Length: 240
Ligand SMILES: [Mg+2]
Image (cartoon, rainbow, N blue to C red):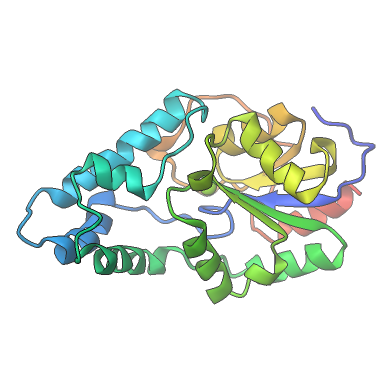
């Protein structure tokens, strides 16, 4: 476990299920938003895209993040999509719009980041995601979080993903803090809590996500549990 004597200088958040509340998602339905614009006559396209995405998530788990998560480009290639098609850009737009109801920030998020920032803490984000950073930044800007985030690292732009230690080191380096000076907040015991603790960070678990078959069988002991996002402020203050 980490040293209690080192002052906390930064708090790094996971995104899905942490800064946004957990939603149960049917990947095929999400990809139907893409397929009905790209080619409504291809009856199996949404399923192929969902299968390709799921395969990438399984690879991330099986390799403990060593091969990253891949990107949307990998999904399109695996499903036989021609990204030079004139329908592709509009289909991408429809796909990402279809996620909008599921990306809305936790009602506590703005206040939580504002208070941590006012306490003089650096704010980071480390997300396992296949989406481009521009889309995440647009979502954060929409929900008035972007200005509070000092460094955001997305696995879509890394060769690795959580729980690989290099993913955590990338965001720590960006913030200019050591692992012992940083706290990680996440909803996944394996990717987030285990990953952060193995690097030497303290880890706060937000325990409300219904991970189901996405859960990895691992025993971890978070340094604290936040039953709502705003609890993070007082937990971090208690460590300073
Ligand atoms: Mg998460």
